[in-house]
Length: 468
Ligand SMILES: [Zn+2]
Image (cartoon, rainbow, N blue to C red):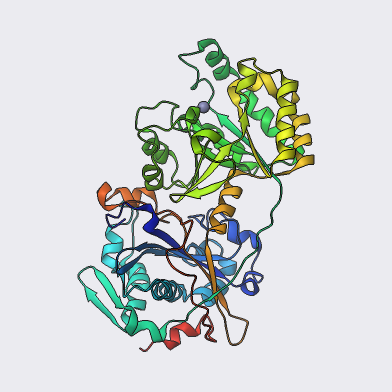
């Protein structure tokens, strides 16, 4: 993004509605994948809008402003009027957040793209309406004090704008800490063993569909949500059944090879899946942090040793999710099933976080005992998906601040910092790779937490504080 390759400079600003407003709508609305298309809610209800932020030297860039909840609410006509009424001021709130962040970081200038530049960098296959971009990228800026137009950018003098900024109050959003077990499947059929074990590969190709159906049935009756890392080449054949049961879906490369073109081909299959599971837990010259971030991945699952961590951690804008143990010892016959299961259960008892990796191609070695295993795991820890765990890791690294209302009813909250460019990888790659590095979340803030100054101010009244 803007030619900046240092991932630590990339941030995301997330805007959430106050819980009092969230309660006015069905909770499911905030998790609908068709409505909240960019899926930047991180498991919390009420996410309204987001901006991609780059903290440069002396300049803060705020780009890719969007609000799926408002901009796509036409799909839910029964809520359209209320959503627009409550959250129609989101472009101003985002800008306010960017300015508050700039003040907090001691940055003198904020730049945001003018509508034409934003349109140029939008997926060319989309038929875009200029007035929609003007409403988001030009109108709030034209109203803000201290703003001048420089070429394709709006430039705000932060000190001139400061008086109009509502400074948010830092706060906390506690997260439950529970013993967690993640069941993870590498769904690869014969792709992982074509050369080394053609007989196993042949059998895995033949029985893959049947094994998958049996796993899903066992998980449905145990009420366990798992994570399915699927080889991209046949993702479309299996995703319907997996998603229908509410499991998390991620990529396990495109075809299990290391030909250097796995990430791009995965993204041709799906824009949005958040996770990538490295084949054989091996990093290649392609799967660098920068490339994974560029291709809009939020988490990476791999072995504990290559990741260098026993527990989930955020580093270089990528959540690292270590696979604690997998079913490989069953395949190599280093362990019997009973030995393997005991080791797994002991691990779950011992550790706050365990991820167990299971392969569809080894399903004959564990699937007959799988329903029983799920019950045992469930009795020891809370089963969660890797998407859920990654969302908590990202939120745990996020600064949280709120703007309060004098009337209480319309206060709004902002979460600043964190993570990936919200735009699609395609949007980023439409420009030259050097000019477009996707953003990633931050483990630490570059400066102190946000200002603790609170101004009584309602969400809607922010607009009225801006001189017209
Ligand atoms: Zn594999």
